[in-house]
Image 1 (cartoon, rainbow, N blue to C red):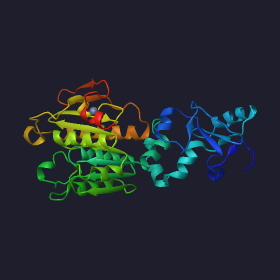
Image 2 (cartoon, rainbow, N blue to C red):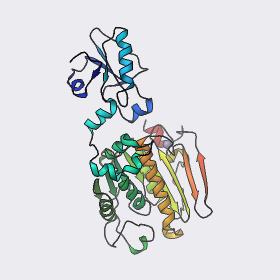
Image 3 (cartoon, protein in one colour):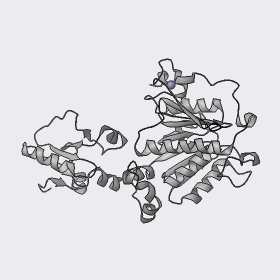
Image 4 (cartoon, rainbow, N blue to C red):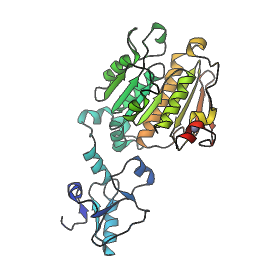
Length: 341
Ligand SMILES: [Zn+2]
């Protein structure tokens, strides 16, 4: 290794572990979203012994050059990782091909997403539980946005009375997970989609959830929603709850052990709940809520801010009134959060 202040990724990867301290100069949020293995944040205590090198990296390897130079002036063996975190990300993960650059151009343009956000989406797996009125629009928009791997679980078959809202299905009698998968692959052939034609429950949750980074609850009964909540908290999977009936819908995102879960708020599933079958539902209302759930997933994956955590968004689509009910975080009485620390 020469003594230039900049060290290339290839040079860095050859360094023996323990011969350097790797320092991430970006914000804590960026660090939490993803960092180079073994890196510490700038404010953490650094213990230097003898020959140890200090390697700084920022997002693109620009500010870190300046920092490394300053440390050199103080006598440290400091280096800046060339290309920064972005160079590492490109090497570690699947990168975008020419078609993808064009396909996702309009969202890469968004400052909140950019190339890093798009790469995060490509390298993230989302599980959709329920391929009905919420799951169809949600899955379609996640596929279009380029979420790299989408799983869909549903044991049910498409019936004619589903068609007013479950807009991804084309033929009756087909398993809903398989049917939605066919539509998603048609929307975007750059992603991987897996259909699980089975019922989600305690017996298969651990194995299923293990392969996914984020879960979307698109189920349609209160009991199932509480079961999804409990299993996501138990297996530490961030997830987005959504519900819709008639013209009204609700959405909330849960980061287990950090933000309130469904049971922190309601304790038990409400009894005598109306269902789409008994009360009725308008498809566009389900579409609206499914799209908000897709947005929550995209925000979680790309920049993890402004999520519907510790709050429930309630949308009356008849009067077009919205309100947001706020909650005070995890409840000390929640049987699920307190028993799955
Ligand atoms: Zn809870």
